[in-house]
Image (cartoon, rainbow, N blue to C red; front, side):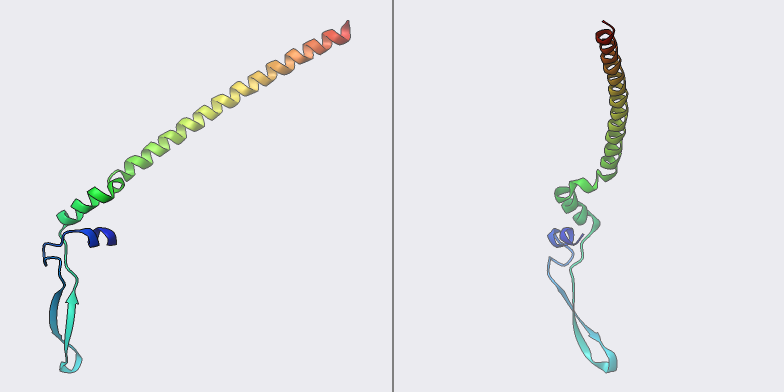
Length: 103
């Protein structure tokens, strides 16, 4: 937010500090510099140029969640295939071992 504010074109005050004299406590006058103000359009103009990811934050979170679900689904399938391959390997080894010892 601070970066967007600093980089924005502050047309309201011409990009300059606005000076005011105010009455302080006891009748003293104080010199106050007010920071230039920006409109929402000026803010959005800089924000869309520099920080594009802020507009698509929700979309990015949803896409990340979808990828995580696909990875978990793939991991489960991979684990099932690995289990069946191990069962097949040990069955084949046991059968060969039985044949060798039986002969």
